[in-house]
Length: 215
Image (cartoon, rainbow, N blue to C red; front, side, top):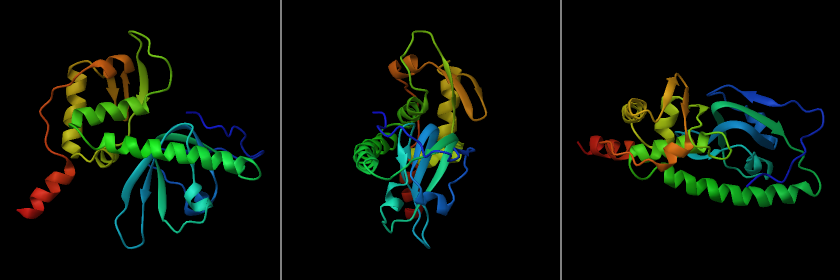
């Protein structure tokens, strides 16, 4: 669903984030619409490790929690090169923003569950499809898509870095990914959506940590 709030704040600069760059704490008091790219939103309580919460994708509004005055400490970091536009939160637009954010947040939370359950190849496939440029599937057409850093993919998917790397290598050998470059890959969303990958993979990173702690 596209964000109904279309008008950026007049004369306000667009914010461009490089891969792995974060919004500064003061910038989180502003409402932003994500135009291009993807960011990860993490819970970052003082004195505790950060914890992945959800993704934000094109059309999503970022910053509602801080704007609403909650005491939750969050960080926003780009998974891939990202462009954000500031939003005017005054007047009637506030209700539109809040209504859209409730629907979008519910959808993104469901997506987090799908990204962290099932086999690792299934998780990687789902993430690639989420990051792929929007548009109709055309038979035989491939598009180039930016990829997150392996550490970020591992964290988002709750899978060991080595496992994610093996899955990407397997997808390349089987021509599901073409011309894979550092942080970029070319693939057909239609082909990727239809394939059933059968690749022997290890348990999730969480399970591995539990086994190691018990050992």
